[in-house]
Image (cartoon, rainbow, N blue to C red):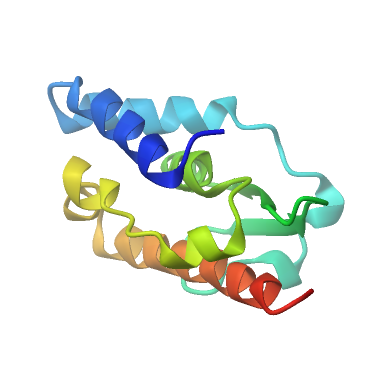
Length: 141
């Protein structure tokens, strides 16, 4: 299993191979379209991420080995790609690794600078919710 930093480096390499942000947006959309849909029973108000303009649902469970498994979906294509991108790095990692992660790939690929302010705020809300789950599970035996 790759570390968070190894996964980030893979993402950076993939994004930087694309010449402009129109191509990078398309990559985000493609990533989102490749994500398995969330079950309708998980699309509840309790699983909605506060702070996102679009609706984003995030579900977290802890595997037997203590790693966190996330599933997510959004009703907006680019936002679905963004949450898929985040989960491609943070999914199936330990709570401690998630909490300690410096998500430097965001700076390296210039994601926040190329999102609208509302989407950028939504990205931060997604990260916050993922870290809240990690914190909650890190305190459980």
